[in-house]
View: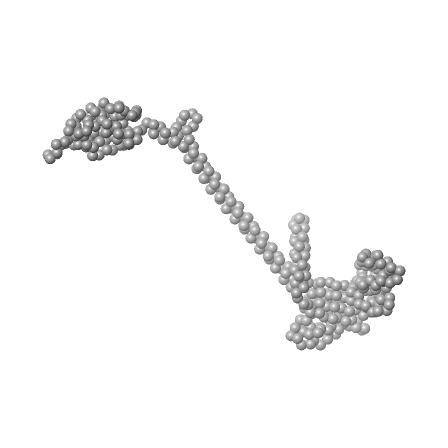
Length: 357
């Protein structure tokens, strides 16, 4: 659970950082409405705006803070004008502690730490209980600089921050009067805080939606990749298995057992080709014999044709080393208009099938 909480915290911090960066880029191209909020001597505040959204001037609105709420309540036009605006608060001088600080000129790059360390000495408050700021360093004699310093209580500014947040302001800047060593009045910024981005909560919400959508798409792609990859792997293994089986069926093993390839080789060695059988038949049969049909089935040959002396064909085939067990498989006939006999002879093809003579 602790790890989950840390991850969520890191995620929210990352979302906030990205939203801030997006808002910073957008701020360069978008103009925020500016509202001046001046504190009056009686403790009231007066808000001034150059123009409203429709271009018509807004009458300045004066109010007093009562439990962080303006009294009397602001008009609808003023609420619309303050929404998304930048509020610039100018505090009156009697609420400010102002000093002129003197430092060596070499301390110009370290003013933040040096001034912060002296706040509790320069003001009635500690650094944590005060808001403070200083103006630009002014060079003086003897290689030294002077800085106009102003501060007020954080309790004075906090109600204004809550009011700005309630009204939907984008940022708040609090300034206070200060006087330089030469008597020149200055305005010192005590606080400049961004309350929300230009788009409010829209950018973080869109970022969350985009990240969740991206994560869901990535998970879906991963699952699809696992499924398709597993299916392809299974198909590849099945194909390899079938290839191995085919190869094994065509391979002659070391023990001499015959596989498909061996059987084919043995059949080639023991079974003559049709051309060789035809050649042997042509050598055995006399010139007065004519073959009209020749069939070879396995190790048996059948010959049909015309001859002058059919019985002699059996003797001729038996005398040949290429044929054995010659016999008639159908009666010998003679047509009325033919001088030759029609014969039907069959014989076994010998396992030994030499070239003959």
